[in-house]
Structures are given as structure tokens and as C-alpha cells.
Length: 384
Image 1: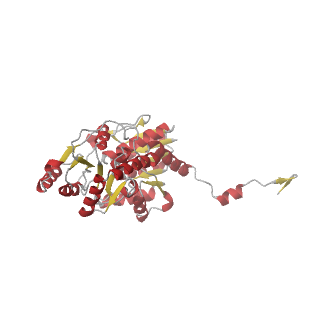
Image 2 (image 1 turned 30 degrees about the vertical axis):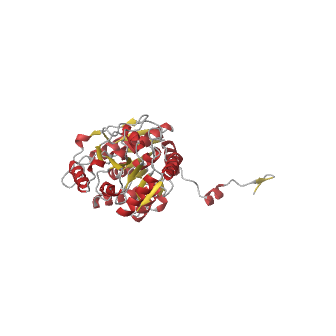
């Protein structure tokens, strides 16, 4: 199968890592995968995949109205290539890539598969494009139940939505391996998405009620956001127990996660990254807010604990429960690894995506049509 994979460099880097890992896994299944998009340090062309002509990130400019000036050029380049050598299908990731895919693939008659990896909340423009792309795509892959409901509410026919879980590199993220150095304090690890509402301020606010516990935060926050977080910690007199690491290289994340007693992901709205699954793959219980895909990833009381959003008292109680209950942490650790290995490894996710591709390209024949196509039976030379 010839697959054209599109990604957008302006998307959060973890999403592009997901695209690269999926492309690599599909290539491993024997498919010919071509990667189109902007080249950047976080998204090298995956092994086994053919790179298209990629634009440099220095060209990633925007006009006063927020439009990408190279979108037309990108669409024209895709059309020219697909007129000459069309793929069997196009799989776009993120709303901008989806728009380019729909505009370029329709004249060539190539079906578009769309993954949003979380519906946007930032602008009316993004929401409008997501609705347009969702309705025009031949198939939309949702990564969690809430995203599926959001797509249906946006007008995407339910028959054209399928759910495929997110993937985890279980070879990189696993319980065995080196562990980052730590103090004698019990440790909560979190990863701060740069977006507003990542919940790390709530974790800092919980520390005064969690003596003997340190909070380690990874993530490339803006300088202003970092300073606000430091001031928040000083105000609560816990600055000595809050460590802001900044950006952490992907290859160093497993060791950091394995050093945690608890991983905490407590955003205030339905937006989530893949790192809680990576923590689970490392055998770390996750405390998470019951929003978005976190309700699919974390099984309450089994692989971790779910808490209501923006409920500080409840968050403190649940963090204390998991930190102080060795038996609960051990059972959650075992169950978390089992869950990731059962449904989130890249070979399994790639096979699930492949099944959806084949369903799109070779849809099953309805039972009534199959019945009409059955050859008549011949009895003793008489056709019956």
C-alpha cells in the first residue's frame, strides 16, 4: 500500500513524534510510506520511509491574518506529485495538514484519512477548519472517546469515524532501565504543556499539604510562565521542593519517569499529551484529571487515579493516597504496564490503523449483495 503521511511542524512536537513512530511501524508492515511536511529537529524522517521535499522551519511565517503563506505552494506541490504518482491514500495529522490534504487529494481522487490527535480550542478558525476537514475526509481516526463524541457533534458522520488508541514506544519506555538521580523525598513528576491550563500550578499548590514530597516538572515553558510558577512556589513556601527542569530530551524521559513515585497530569481542560501513557509504560501510577483522553488512558483505581478538574482538595487526597499506599502503587504499576502492552504498542496500533485503511480501500460487501452474487446451484445439469 502506498501511503502519503502529512504532518505540520507547528503542531506540538509530541504529535510529530507520534506521526514518525506510526510511519515507521507502517513501513515495518511492508507499506510504502512517504512523509510530507516541514523538517525539524523533533521530527526526522522515520526509518524506512521516503522523505518528500520538506520546507525548512525558517519559512514557517504567518501573515497578519494568521494564514500560512506557503499553504498554496504546498498544495500545488502535492497535486503535482500525486497527479504523476498518486498514493493509495493520504493520512493527515493536525488540522493544517488536513486542509492541505483535502485540497490536494480531491482532484486526484485519493481518499484522505484524518487524525486530529485532540480537537483544538484555540481559535474559531481552527475549529472551522476541523469541521470542514472532518466532513470532507473519507475516514477520521479518533484517539479517545471524547474526541469521537466531539467529531460527531461537529457533524462528521459516525460511520466515517473510527477509534484507534495512541501508541507508545514500549522499547524506549519500559520499567527496566536507568533511573534519574533523586533525593530521599518522595517524588511527583509532571510534564508541563506550554498551553494554558496545564495544571502544574495546582500541583505546586498541593505541596504544602504533602510534606516530604518534591515536585519535578519537565517542559519547555516560556520564561514568563516559568517565573510565575517560581513566584507561586515561593508564595506557598515550597520553592525548595519544586524543580523546574525545562525541556528534557526524549531519550532522557524514561529515566526521569522511572524516578517518580507518581506521575501527575492534571490539565484543566480536555487536552492531553501522550506522556502519561509513557509513564504507565515505565510502571509509574498516574494521577490525572478526568478529562479528554485521560479517561481512556487511566483506569481509575487500576492503573492510576482520576480526579475532578480544578478540585484542589480532591487532588491532595488522591496524591496522598497513592504516595502513602505502597500496595496500591505496586498494583497500579503492574496494571499500567500490562495495559500499555495490551493496546498501545506501535505494532498493535499500526495494525489497527492498517485495518482501517483496508476497510476504506476495500469495504466489505453487504450481506444482501453477497447473497445476490452467489452463483446458482446446478442439480443434475439443471441450473436452479
